Structures are given as structure tokens and as C-alpha cells.
Image (cartoon, helix red, strand yellow):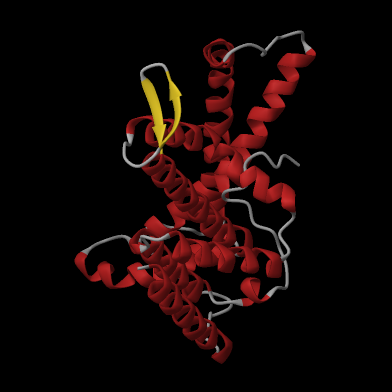
Length: 264
């Protein structure tokens, strides 16, 4: 199994996060996102990252999945570091490269932004790795349900979002299979960034054809099982909020309040 793309992949398990209601997990994620972008100090951000790492350790997510989840943002991290290190001025000059300088304020702002990106990815991984696409769709549909009175197709939008998340690792695995097949036929994908991008371009056609084929098969399967757009649907298992879910929500609120008091 390809672990290079982790976003959208679900890992079955019995941890406390797996057993939580998807509605509670979405609420906690929203709280963490708000606090993540409100924090202004390294102390608060560091405490938030520690809480996330404790949650990751509790769920026992394999290290390779964390690496696979962080790998797609490597170029974003590099771009962010270059942008802040070289173009944000202030404080002591740490390094001088000709006319360019790396100063203390730039390094501080760059590291803070990179930590935010890592925290954002960790939150997304915790949600998708511990919540099945169906449960995630049901949770999103619950919060969008009031918009249905205004004609907003909450159920259909939730299904589309969950299918899109599920297709991310599927398409990634398909691209790896295509890559290995071309390498077995003697194709060379080595070289610089632009050279590799040019060599990968021919793979886009079969990749898109495969994605459209999978989408067509999925549509036929959903229709065969009675799925109709706009139709009222029932569930075999109605999801209920338990006492443990409320306890986790209260603990998350208390933890985030501590982060706010420490970091704002």
C-alpha cells in the first residue's frame, strides 16, 4: 500500500478518537483551527502542537503515515522559509549572502508560520485517519442540514466532499502504479524539478482516464443501491452523542482555553 499520500485515508481502530462522534470531532477541529490562527506566541503554539502529538500518540498512528501526510507540504515549507527568511527584516542579522540578509525577525516569523502549517496538517490527519468517509459525510451533513431549508443540498455536498477525500489516496496509488509500470519499460524520471515535471506530463492522460472510469463505476454502484439525488434517506445506525463525547468536547474546550491564556 502506498503511504506517500495520507490525507483522506482511514485507518480502522478502537482508540478513543475512533469511537468519538464525527460531529464532536468536527467541532473540536473547528475550535483547534480557530485557536491555531489566533495564537501569536511560540509558547501557545508549542503547547497546541504538544496536545496534537499526544493525540497522535494515543491513537497510535504509524510513523510512516505522519511522514506521508507531511511530505506534500515540503515544498510549501521551503517556499515559506525562503519568503520569510530573506524578505522579512528586523532584529539581528544572522547571515549575510551578498546583498541578501537573514535577520532574526524573519527567522522567527518563518518558523512560526511553518509550525502553523504542521499543526494544520496534523489536525487534518487526525480527523481523516480516525473517521471513515461515511461517518465524516454524516457529520458534515448534520451541520449543513439547517441550510436545506434555503434549498442548499446539504446531503449531496457532504457526499461529494467525503468521496473527494476518499479519492485522494486512490488516485495517488494509481499514479504510483503508472509510474512503476513506465519505469519497468525503461522510462527515466530522474533529473531536476522542471525536467521531472515534463517527464510526468504524459502520465496525466491515463491517470485522468482511470479517475473518470472509477467515478463512472462509483456512480453506477450508487444508483444500483438506490441512491437518488434529493431523496430522503434513512440510516441503519443512527449516530448518538454519548456522555464520553460531551466530556471530550469539554476537555478540548478547557485545553484550548489554557492555550489561549498561554499564547495570546
